[in-house]
Each structure stands twice: as structure tokens, then as C-alpha cells.
Length: 126
Image (cartoon, rainbow, N blue to C red):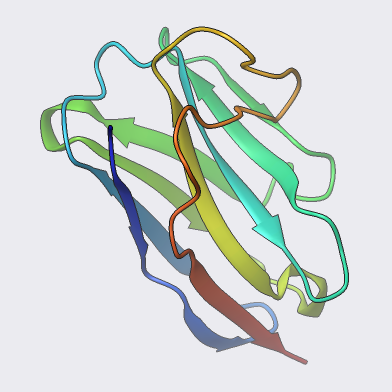
């Protein structure tokens, strides 16, 4: 079982920036995809950014142009650079990785092959 641990959340004002990190307990080289999800109070969890093994990326329309997903295979780490944050970005953010190759999802979704981690809270005040 691979564990993914998110960090980097916090409270910022609208227009500010944050960088989230997600460290995996083993090599991510072979992961079919990795991604970031978020869940706001009272809303469903949504996939917002995905990076495939070949480095190609997909974003949800709500974050396109403001968020950038990247990974560092040498550090087993996934990142999410978030700029121009808005109050509607307030949510718990979760990372996901799929090394199995089944049920990957489509678009900005990369459904995880293991249970969700604790996530990291992002709060944006206007």
C-alpha cells in the first residue's frame, strides 16, 4: 500500500498563492497518473488537476490558468502551485495516485488506488 501525505495548505487572502506538496511512500515513476482533488463544505469531491506518467496535464476549467500541477520523480513528490486564489478555492485538498492502471478516470480526475489521505486545508479570504 502506498501512502500519500499532503502539506502546504493554509490561509491566504484572495489573489495570493500557495504551493501544495504530496509525498509518496515509494517511487512514483511507474504511476499511471497523479492528481489533486478538492472538497468544499457541502460539496462533492472534485478532480481539479491531473498529471500522467508522460508529463501531460489536464485541468478543470475552474482552475485552468491559475493552478499548475507538477511532479518530481526523484523526490517522490507531487506539487500544486496555486496562484490568484479566490474564495471559491477554499476547500480541503487531497492528492491521489494510481499505480494500478484501473479506474483511472478521465479529464482532470486521477482516481486513487488507495484510501484518501488526510488532505490539507486551503482557506482563501476575500
